[in-house]
Length: 322
Image (cartoon, rainbow, N blue to C red; front, side):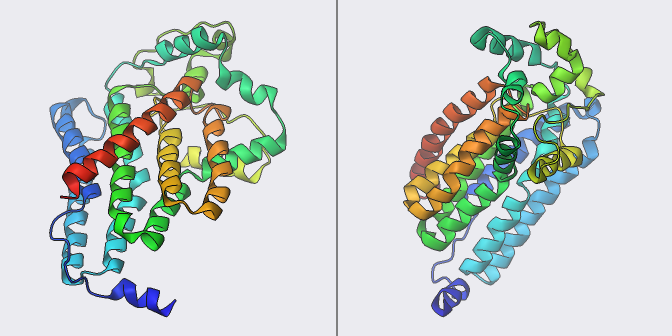
């Protein structure tokens, strides 16, 4: 343990001079959305906060780069990464600020769902499996979304430091690619859309277009399941604190957690996999169970995760690492 601690503060003999790969991913996403914000400045609800937020992110990147250059060691690398990982949830409301300008597409996705399954899985899942045990297990999985991301990155930091930056890049690049999709495909998910059109329409397979309804309406349904459960309460608290009618297709919860599972499989640490795998399964099922996503969102999240994992792994090897 003493050697491990010393290693964290040992000065790097060849410190990295520029930005890390995951920081480029952040800057690219910030730049793309900044241009959008400038172009649609007059149509945005909070344009100044939107723009200044990006400036602060870039300033933070610069500040942590300076700290690392002054003290180039593993600990400052970790601090540099931890600050950006901690800000992942901060980017979520921004997708709403962008896609609220566009007409909502939930009627299209709910229609596809109905055509594919003959019913709405998000409506019947919890109804058919009302057990408090199932409800709590699935809510537990959903709550562990961000901890799974953090755990994956920390596992690489502690056990395979030479691939830590690649792990961060794959996670971050996938994350911001999902958010870029959310920005321009305005789908809010069942919990918002079902409430907007009424459950009677949903039951009868009627899915009207709501246009710009979500520009001024942000109410959603309460999650189905065991309302007295601890993890149910945590999910509902999170929804009350920061849920927005945005970011449904594809499911980034399924997508990013799948990317993390692929990274953990590559790590080949069986004990960690035994712990994380059941949580991952519960998380994926929970996205539909709690009505955050349509089933096609979850399926698309899984398929896109496979694509992103191998795509960004290749990009890192060919471009970033050099």
